[in-house]
Amino acid sequence: MDKLFVNAGAGLEQWMVSGLGLSSIITNLIMVVIQVAMILSFVLLNVLYLVYLERKLSAYWQQRLGPNRVGPRGLLQTTLDVIKLISKEDIVPQAADRKVFKLASIIVFIPAVMLYAVIPFGKDMIAVDLNMGVFYFIAISSTTTIAFLMAGWGSNNKYSLIGGMRAVAQMVSYEIPFVFSILGVIMLTGSLRMSDIVAAQNDVWFIVLQPVAFLIFFIAGTAELNRAPFDLPEGEQELVAGATTEYSGMRWALFFLAEYANLIAMSALAVTLFLGGPAGPWAPSWIWFIVKVYIMIYVFMWMRWTFPRIRIDHLMHFNWKFLLPLSLANILVTGVGIKIYQWFIQ
Amino acid sequence: MQQDYAGIGIFFLIAAVFPMIVLATAWLVRPKRPSPEKLSTYECGLETQGSTWVQFKISYFLYALIFVVFDVETVFLYPWAVRFSSLGLFAFVEMVIFIAILVIGLWYAWKEGALEWM
Image 1: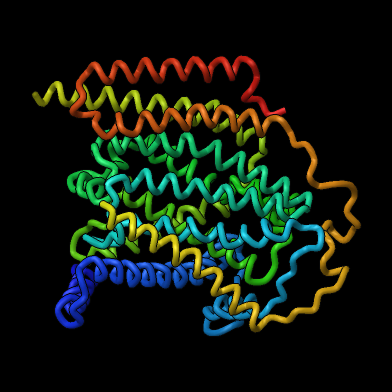
Image 2: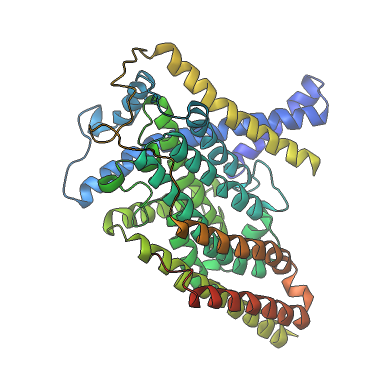
């Protein structure tokens, strides 16, 4: 069971080489295309039901019922929402910068899918096992900022502009502690490759060795995703919908899709770096991956519906005056710890 | 190595083409009935006043400047972290000095009030 997808992939590759007589390079590329298609459908299916899950969970936390009309227990709600969104009129405001406005909804989606290239979905189940996997993830995830700035500026709407500016300021600021918190894990592993990081956690998960780094990672990750208590860029009571105020129909759906795809990717990164990756006893590794990712997503949602939004000056001060020095201290303590450990071993 | 990045390229292509296909599908089925009211800028039902594209708050720029400093620092820190356990004590002390210089920079920015949200 553990090797189900790996063996299926290997069998398909074997068939293409021997049965169809294709060269190995072309076969590899075709395999990547199949992998992307599978990852894309995995992400889309999960996003569809994450929206349902979030609405349902938030309803229970607030003692409501949540969506329960469409289908059994409201399970078809999000599916019908997508059909509704496809058939909605696409409104581009007269005053907007049309090119920037339209391009932003496509650009926001690109990094959200590209992130999954280096995510280990199970044992030997990484689409592209780059030798600088973590760095690739950080680099790609930071480009989401551009789409928000484009959407905010291109809409020519005051709410959008403030929302876009806030998104950029917040995502850029919290990227520093985010990147520094991962450094502790890299120092322990000695490699940026995702499979090496998973293998290094065979004996003990890095959440045990790096608890402070995990907390910093989690807080900064929440801010990178623009989720409450860091949802200032969206702030529906003050900014309507932030950078996406002027978007409607399928363009808006793309922003929504990217937001949830980023949530899954961030949870998957947290699982890979701190929670032992897809490894686990008894069950196949890909089931463990999904279970762990959903636990992380649950915590993210729990946070969102528990804490009130914080003020923007508190947001900035918390990052620059607390998280950043703390993450630097964490690197120092980790370095001293590793050196002392090596000294005692030898 | 090169094949890895060809894979990344395929990821990019599909990620870029997919939203275009979705938007094209939506374009086929959705209604197109624009009217001046519908295309006006949304501002809670009121007419917009003044220009949106104005000079913006300077605080955002200051944060961006400090961000650049620390982001460049990470580029130096990552290779060091990868080779950390084999580098020995000298490299560790050297990196502590490097971080200390940046911490002094942060302290200066803090003292000058660049980290304050005004």
